[in-house]
Image: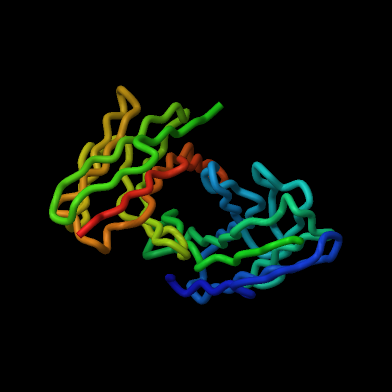
Length: 117
Length: 112
């Protein structure tokens, strides 16, 4: 999984509780992303980061916030979880500089399965 | 709106047979097209990336083609193996960090 870990891998939580998912990389990639994957949908971008403390919204950002205080860590927070946020969440990284070239191939983590009851 | 359509949604073939998966897109501008393989319970893994000027790219038994004029791509799998059972996702980039449009994937099952 290209030096990307996600924690926890599985979580069950109750509606209204806060949840934080963590993505950690050891590859020194510039960009980090959070996606969700649901049946009948392609992967959808929630938020992404283009550097420490630099983040932006994706297609489905409502109800989610992110933080990146270090190059290697990108946190996704559900402030008050709802049943519609039951999903599999994937972290991805891209933008590793090799020589004089910045490579944009994305590498995905193993995913976190979140169930909100 | 940028869209990526994949067909078929699902496919079952016998081990050793060949198959071709299709991807049509309406993404503009076009930067590159990617094919990913996603095993059940795991994250997607990149198979190929093609830019506008590339019309064929191979990765072992996987060969991707791109027709930028008709905005179509295909992924051909030769001599399928049981380990090829997975979802195959077509992704088109319009450039930029947030410029990816994902298809819903083709679920491929290889039967012995």
